[in-house]
Amino acid sequence: MGLLKVTAEGWRYIREFAEAWPQHLQDSADMTTLLRALVEAGISVATVTVAGGWGEVDSAGDLALYERMLEEGSLVLD
Image (cartoon, rainbow, N blue to C red; front, top):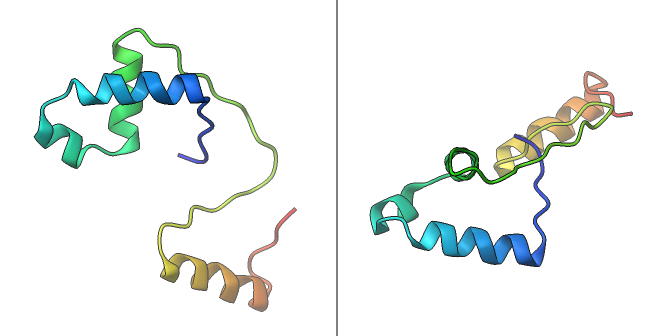
């Protein structure tokens, strides 16, 4: 997915939007589910193209993998 930038006003809106969901959805929803629901509700969600590569880091293991790849030279960052 990449990175998200949300303004303070946008975050207030998202919070109110998500708090209207049943508790089990609030507890289990991920960001993709939230963004999809916003779009389906007619809320504008914009994207920005970023040049160059990027990697998603979700865990310490992901970070260790990228660090190892950098050391080996198999991962090149712009």
